[in-house]
Length: 306
Image (cartoon, rainbow, N blue to C red; front, side, top):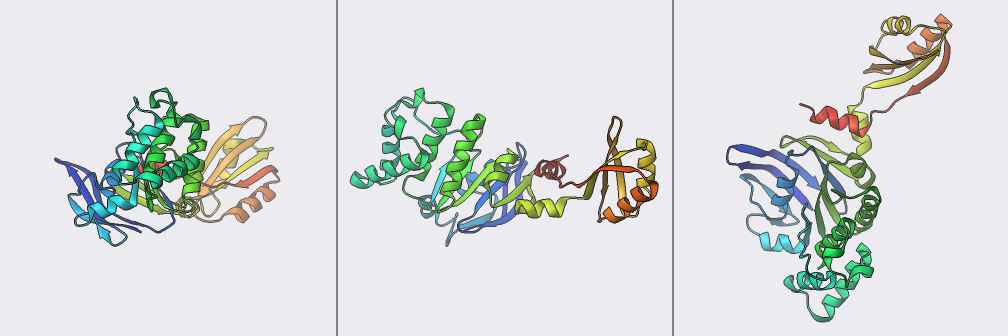
């Protein structure tokens, strides 16, 4: 559905996007993750035809951005980070204006307004001025505008930015519902949001893609093997010295020592049998022995730190 090939964008001498390539399949919800300034917004602006790249290409279905920009814009609904609303208009009038500008008229426009109002749950504010709406409702109105004309692809730039937790959940549920029928690509730096919503994650840092895959695949591919161990009857320093002798263990960290000692044990391979055998041989009292998975936040920080 979307194919990005060697995409590069300079602003003067500044390289914002550095030769990235990825694909989004039909029906996928893909999250474009990265810290502020990573190149997410620039990438989305190129995909939607607001900018042309310095080099590379983007193909949407059978169209490319150099020759078929009008056709591409017809099949994409775009919600920028700063929602483009006319706050002095009523919601109904604003959406009617957007629909009319896209060539939707008469009974078709009325049906479209009803459809997007239902999807975005804004029926109760359709005749209110946009200036009186909360940030959450304004975001829903912007999303409704992006959905007018029933585009096949939805591109959203930071759709939950600035929303409170309840509003974030509401927008998340709307995106997941839309994703049942459409291809969705959205950018965010809120990791929990991406993990809860996306089928796949593309992590970008300093204009380059540093990871691409399903959340669980990224976790499995990026983690060191680790276990949390809680013991009684042993000093933390003694346990650290003994665990470091175990084959496969690279690092041992004391996390807590209040009557019992809690340790984090890390390495590249599965060393649980050896660690357990050591505990038995020392006759230490084992209170807890748990394998720990690396969180998406830890993976993100590792991939995007300086």
